[in-house]
Image 1 (tube, rainbow, N blue to C red):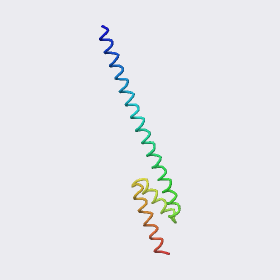
Image 2 (tube, one colour):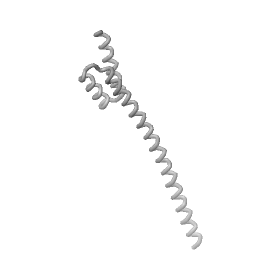
Image 3 (cartoon, one colour):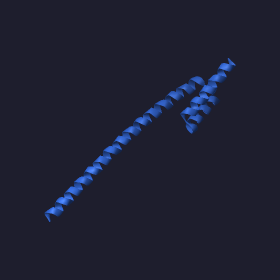
Image 4 (tube, helix red, strand yellow):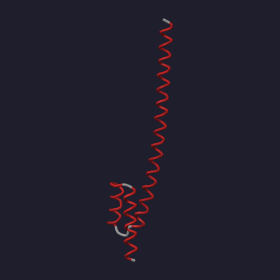
Length: 91
């Protein structure tokens, strides 16, 4: 009887230890994802500032934001570069 209770206690301990380890791993992953999200938000904010500086018309701004939202940062930067090239040609 005592041996059975000891085994149950050990099993419960190992289950709790395993659960604690999993919680710690999840917390680490959450922290990593939060940091990635903060980096993403910072990049978006920087890009929005660049859009406001580079685009000379509201239509260009809307297009740049649409590209940012639907196609991502790299496509938006490419669009902004093309806008700058056109502006230089027109100057």
